[in-house]
Image (tube, rainbow, N blue to C red; front, side):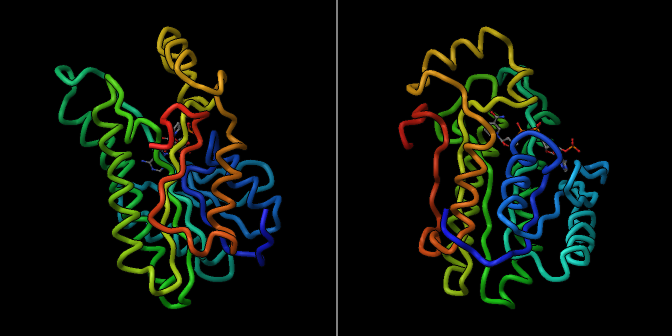
Length: 239
Ligand code: NDP
């Protein structure tokens, strides 16, 4: 891992699963880390602020609170908070679709917009969106989720074009099947089907996603922007 000075890092949804592993990895590397969740309760050894990503005022307040804890603006944003509401297309309600888009895509947009203010001023910043292999691979029963996750690619690439000249990078990490609460909730048959199609022959670990996120936040990745980096054991074949 490339060496980096201590940075102010905000990880949305950093209280559990992939987000928690990312937050712990940054903290272990010596960075200043604040996580968000909806309760505001902090996991052991980390600081937390309350944030509802579907609400712009809540996002704004969360950044203000985080900046106070961090003692300065957020330099690395990891937009990780996300949900699923899986069901087949014909059964999917407007609410199932809208809620997932509002959380996963618009929520990431709200956080990136708020983070950009401080990053533009400092002429430095790293924005990392946690997408999913299904964003570009597709997945039956996940039209809402896949649409939200592929939307993050357009978001990151447009930010790259808008703000690339100001020392800001925006990238997408696309995890495959990672062992977390979210995937434990999937039906066993679906878990088996995924396993059979993963070239690596196993599910991923949250730490494996965190390693790639830390790379994208490092000085070594200063010239990487608008990229989609899979962490999926080969499932999406690099997209
Ligand atoms: P978890 O379900 O374990 O955690 C989800 C996190 O998102 C929680 O911290 C939750 O906060 C937060 N969150 C959800 N809705 C909101 C909201 N409206 N406002 C604020 N925070 C919210 O998820 P994972 O760790 O499994 O996934 C993390 C990310 O990685 C997601 O974006 C997911 O789509 C993506 N991903 C996961 C994969 C996997 O295999 N697990 C594969 C590919 C992508 P709270 O605790 O308050 O509910």
